[in-house]
Image (cartoon, rainbow, N blue to C red; front, side):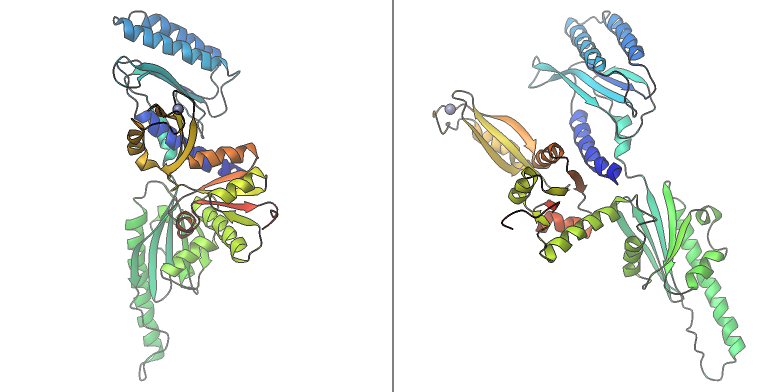
Length: 421
Ligand SMILES: [Zn+2]
């Protein structure tokens, strides 16, 4: 559990960092990307950098040469802080990035410990940072197939990462078990069996078409009311590669979309790795506490901040869709400071509104932005100081939407009741 918890915050941060890095461009080919895989010696990487420093002395442009060599020294300094390469490896990006037009370059350094082991050893000096080997960690890798079937209908769905999609719904055309009068019982039974087999074949074909091309299909779950699902599973209707991927056959009350949702909520032990279910459960727990007025949960920026500061939060739930930033405005003349909270998309117009605006204290038009922090990061840090579990919740589930829209994107399940609640 604790592994997936750290991961949701780590992945969120990695995504942000990579977006930032991808937007950076060097003046020339002077941005360094260094990937050191686990098992490598720090000294080995240090020696390689020493050689690269020597090679860089051949660069003709004085500015580029200086920038590259400065960056290599910075990377070496950062590398030296590690006694050994972390178990997932180490990635350093460093280089002179123009801050505000040509001539305003400043050396920026980013050290990233990847969430999963990297297996490449790479040094690149280019006009951009090579983040692509980290981008792949952001991809939702696992996809599950869900096949619901009974004698009347079938539903095929995919669950990719956290995204649930109903791909096809079929009706069987198989007559019910009671025969019409005058029909012989045996003849009716034979006819029904034929229709059933034809229906199974049809469902199998659709399943093959839908699930087989999915490259990273982790498994297939067969479900439905009654015994039909077992008959289907035992028969030869699925491609053998799909058959090998059947993880479980489970009971549901419905065979439609409702049934698909049943599979998702009924089978957490099969799919416990899927974030989707974890997130739903976490929010449902929060909703339970709120709904039963137990005093063991709270939400909203102000109340959660108070609870965190009191060390009362057991689990902090932050919506990934929380798009709010905190900006520290500072007067460059008198040092006056104030904090503003706003939606991130208005940042640019807010910055423009500052120019020429007089400082509330000394009246000089010298206001500027001193610090920008995302609210989500601000809370995540606060939680880390108090050893609180942080969960970044996607907006892709119903519950995640609820967290974002009804609870301000910030919620907490508490360790103990707070006074006055
Ligand atoms: Zn001032």
